[in-house]
Length: 120
Image 1 (cartoon, rainbow, N blue to C red):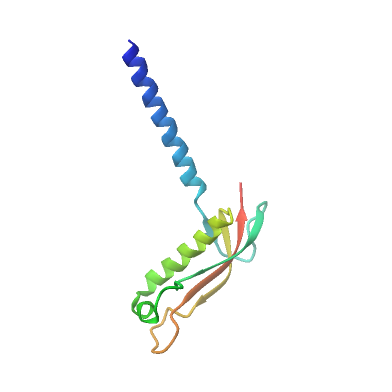
Image 2 (cartoon, rainbow, N blue to C red):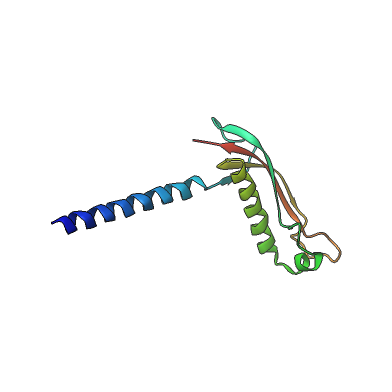
């Protein structure tokens, strides 16, 4: 009987820890929105920028990166910056997309700038 109680408690502890980790992952989610106004009833935390370029990246590696990968990289960098401020929502206020067209000599950087909010 003691072994059964012990195993049951172990299972309950594992389930509780799993739920806590899942809640932490949900807290890390950052919604990205566009439009005229930011979200209502949320706390403004600051402004962030997400770019498709790394500080360490060379021009040649940026030139050969596919457009969709540059777009995803800029979006992920924006989300990471928002998380650093403790936000869970970003309202895009500026978007520069010089990387969409493959023109020789053009800069292929994609930039998102947005206000970060903490919404409940």
